[in-house]
Length: 69
Image (cartoon, rainbow, N blue to C red; front, top):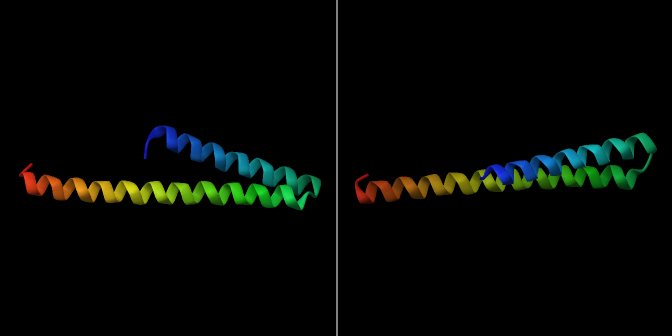
């Protein structure tokens, strides 16, 4: 996962937290739920990126063993 992806996911999480807080403060349940959804989406994106990184590490390890590096 790149730094840009990390930053985008963090920004999405923070945006979601702000929406959730604004929704809670104003009694807007829809805005609060939208904020929670944004946070959940950011978390899923983080997990997918972490899994992709692990797969890449595994592929690189196998490649290195096959090539003798």
